[in-house]
Length: 606
View 1 (tube, rainbow, N blue to C red):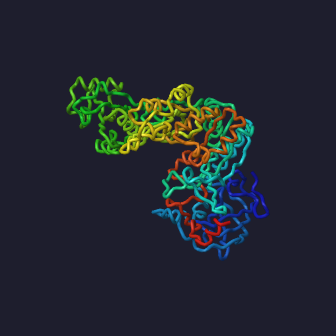
View 2 (cartoon, rainbow, N blue to C red):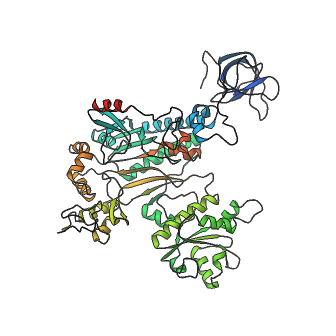
View 3 (tube, rainbow, N blue to C red):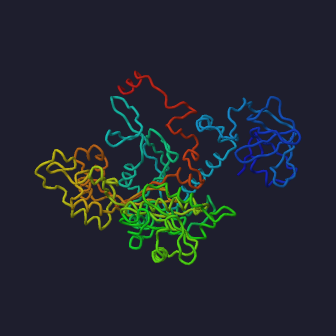
């Protein structure tokens, strides 16, 4: 890449390969003064150089300068130097308001207020450069697969019961909403015959406060394909990620990426988002440990255990120590609500730790055998009712794995598939849908849907039972009681939906869509939608489906989240150019700002 323009012959990243004595004309920002002799540090997006000579009159830190001179011989562990004979001040700079190298660092609000200064010469620009490269490689790969890059509208329909996005007045008392995803548009593109679509879609999500992993504006890699099933989608994304990893990180991914069903992920890892960077899997130790005289075990319905090897403990131990102290292990256990203990395997099949004092030798042997443990291993257990114990064990797995350093410098993808269609809300006694209604059930689920009775014959509605449906009410959306056998069928129903998991974090979601109109009608009924609600929320999509819709499916992957994980930063804003603060404001521009109510009224009037 040549940087030559009328102002410069090279950018500062090109100097490393040039021979000493090469004449150069360079531009950049003026940095700190050199420790020895007259001169200053000159830097740009690509690198830094020691500029040796007299500083132009009136130039201070942050000024933009141009120098002309010759490149000096390289010195070990030092940036290249240029002996310049002419220097021109191109742009003055006031005293910089913030020192981004200060200790302690600037407050987050100050950083965002002067975000352009934080980017200048810092790691933020390198992250944006990697983002650009990632997008380029993504486009190249999908082009070879026959995809069309198509932009869909950002201004979409607003419905008070379905959309919580940002509202845009359109006149005559009507409004648009900024799109949270291109979901309906990409399905309509399949009706149009597009066959393969993608875009880097700008999406909007309205929240009163942001967690570090969220922003009100973000970018998703969104795609849809016709005449595909789940395996086709997995294969496409596997190949795409392999190319990105090779091009951006110069690493190779083993394909195909691992696949786990939702039920299998919960059983083996205690979570639907397993972190596969380390091997510890949950083991059901209920038969061996329920009823043992240890904290929580006597009353427990189930006990799930984890084994962390002696080698892992040794690798995590500070130099000169024997591993985490008992106080530290207790603190990690305290991060979950529920009964949990730890034990360490000593010599001759003994167990060590506060919980080991009440155990007989035979009981110690049973526990060690149940987990296949050996001397020096750390054993962690969660107890309680079966579901809670399993989830707590999954949380402990993540806490201990990270604390022991088992995730450092590693990455691991997996697909989690066959998610439930419905979940149970114990607070209301309702069975509620957890997937959108266009999600295709699994082949087994199709039989379940056909077998479910949609209109329970109820003569009266109980005034004191809000979960009791009115006569003729459709199944779903709170109308199924906890003890209703139809509820068990709903909970067993699985869908052709999936999530792409990276390092224990959701990176993307997708599904195969419903293309059969009769099946779609039954699913709407299961969700408890009446005809008016269906028409209001999905009418334009269903109208298009009347004219022939191919089997189709797709997914959306968070581009910002992917880059955040690649860069190993914990804040989504660190991989965006100009992010918002946690209260969804922009300190740099002062937005959002108050608007004259009369002006808003005029906008709505049109």
